[in-house]
Image 1: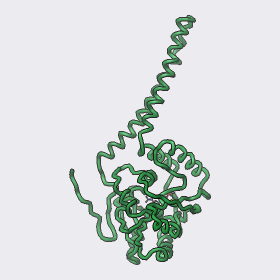
Image 2 (image 1 turned 30 degrees about the vertical axis):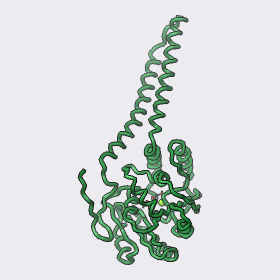
Image 3 (image 1 turned 90 degrees about the vertical axis):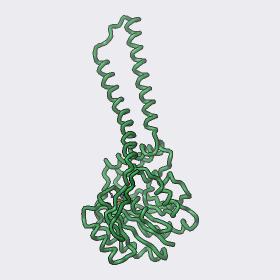
Image 4 (image 1 turned 135 degrees about the vertical axis):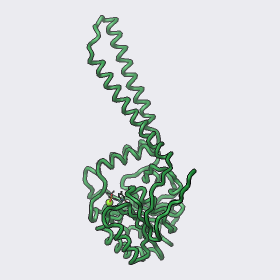
Length: 315
Ligand code: UDP
Ligand code: MG
């Protein structure tokens, strides 16, 4: 079987040599032929130079350099679209996705599974981050139709059909975790122990995780819009009942209507609610806007086969 390994790399200069030697040790024992596709996602350090050197030394390592940092999602997509293998594995450069696990994953493809996903345990993660993840998946699974599982990330092996299926999804705002699940096919899961990052630092901050959460919910459905309707109705109803009560109190009990506090509360409260709802609508509008531009997901500057070129299509 021919296997492609896609590795998105962003400022991974220090880990690359370790990654390359590990892959050179592990892969020949697993498959007859393989290609490793290193995708440089616009790194600012010496990653690209390192990657070129790796390719010079061992041409089983191909590469692809994007014109700037497009983010991991785009880097993975670029790798998938340039991969040639019958099966494609996606790995992180930092060795947090142990390549040795492929020994357990690949046989499952032969058993007829189209996707084999690796699920990690959360041992050794900062406590704050694990907690955020748990809450995140709890909420997400309520909000979206696709099934997302804690510990399941981008580390997986896909058969060619699954890869083509993913590539056929043209959306610009890509949320891979959801897309992987959305395409379906027969999925097998392999568990592995969490590995701490080797060198360098994770590029994710808490803020990114929260943004990622919002992306996840918004890219799969319009439930937040539906929720806004319910929320708006509820608030309007409360205001109506309260107004009625003030009116009855004034007419029946002759109670003088209390000062401006209630007015201010209502104005500020409704202002807030309206801004939230506008924000939700705006998020969708922004997405529609970026989808209608039909921009490519990434631009290639250079590949191991030569310079990147982009077909110009004007509709
Ligand atoms: N990565 C990338 N582009 C980015 C950020 C990250 O290609 O803009 C790559 C990075 O080089 C690594 C993988 O995505 O191979 C996962 O990144 P990281 O280890 O920072 O994330 P974490 O493991 O903390 O989720
Ligand atoms: Mg990592």
